[in-house]
Image (cartoon, rainbow, N blue to C red; front, side, top):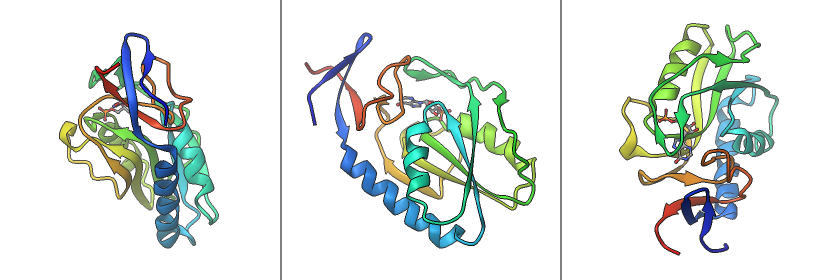
Length: 181
Ligand code: IMP
């Protein structure tokens, strides 16, 4: 992977390479198949950050499934505000559906905890989480994704859909904040 990159005022260095992400996503697709191949599950992709992960994960799921997209605004800059606003765009009935929420990263967990409560009220048949990255040290609520790719330290990361104030979503790998040059 290439060297340190700059986005706005911060520098980031390579952290998880594209091949390792691809392998983790394929594994997750195979594990999901075991549980969901006969259930036509509904994946709910949490925009914006999960769009790259969801696109790859769905194609790693070799069984009938559907996808919907929502937006939750709760994060600004490089530290969580803990502020959660409305869910936008959920236009599919969830009642009696097997639902899998697809999220890029669990940091404090506050965003997902709020969202999961709202989803539970819509009475899905089951509700699980597929997350690419977890920061266990940053968790403020009891959220344990049934499916996850990598546990990472409590540092800011970008790439593969994750941004720093709009930049870096297009990077094919994950980069981590650094002070190095
Ligand atoms: P939480 O509510 O603190 O778990 O934050 C969840 C949301 O914050 C994620 O869906 C991301 O959009 C954003 N986020 C948390 N950590 C990072 C990070 O390290 N890089 C980029 N975005 C992050």
